[in-house]
Image (cartoon, rainbow, N blue to C red; front, top):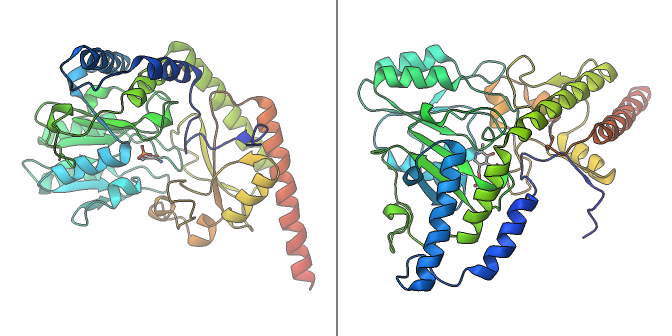
Length: 377
Ligand code: PMP
């Protein structure tokens, strides 16, 4: 594969495998000889690797090891949560499709122009649904990076006896997050440098998860099937490193680069729109509409110039669908169609930003040029 020089601005789609995770995977591949459910020595050795990885993840997140249920990824985690709860459910309008597409009997909580859920709507809905209900609001949005007021939502839920679930896939290990705010959390390993096809739910006792897969009774019967032990070990290694202290300094540096990039792009084109610009956002994410050119065309142009980025969310099998997130924020279709997502990694350098800005200028000049020609014709 000749992608060695491609600059990666699509970290939110998947984070490259961290080298610590890679090394542990290589070691584990030689070590694992048994099935963690087998009672003989080889099985017990595999079980001990599994439980030690679970403990490392629990320690990294300051939760109890027994609260962690491994799944095939956050899509499955989100489905288990929404299928498991029998009662009124409120879901924010900017959730990932793995939450929005599970049930059609949920209430959608609207968001403001920055994509922040209206707290008074949640409060009113909770008043109207006394007793056990479920509220699900993500910690940070995958398309815009906008961070939700999860502390306040947690308080509202506690006050009303409602359960609070949060999809923390994009927020964990990028911004400080207190896992105790939530009754249930969905995580995905490949967003923090583990392998894809692995995730977990972190559940408080009594949270009603639905066991989608039944049979062997693994993961306290919440998720049958032989565990993806290599993936779990990679997740532990990646998360431990991603939660490390140095990492938060790295994200601060990334945030400064992102702000610098936004300033430079705005100075080239003042009509440019940064989604959720005045809200708190993830350090690494920006969603920008460049007027005059469809997002898919921009993505292709950037790709030709050696830059990987995406149009909206990358979770749509390579298809660029209308963004439900931008629509919920009231962004007109004509603007949303021109929005690209640039997501920086902890390894992004100033040179990478300089390259992106100069290619952006080139693409923007070509649009202006074409518009002038079109107007003259
Ligand atoms: N939630 C969010 C916010 C995401 O960004 C993603 C992946 N794009 C998912 C859920 C799904 O995660 P997974 O790929 O592990 O199924």
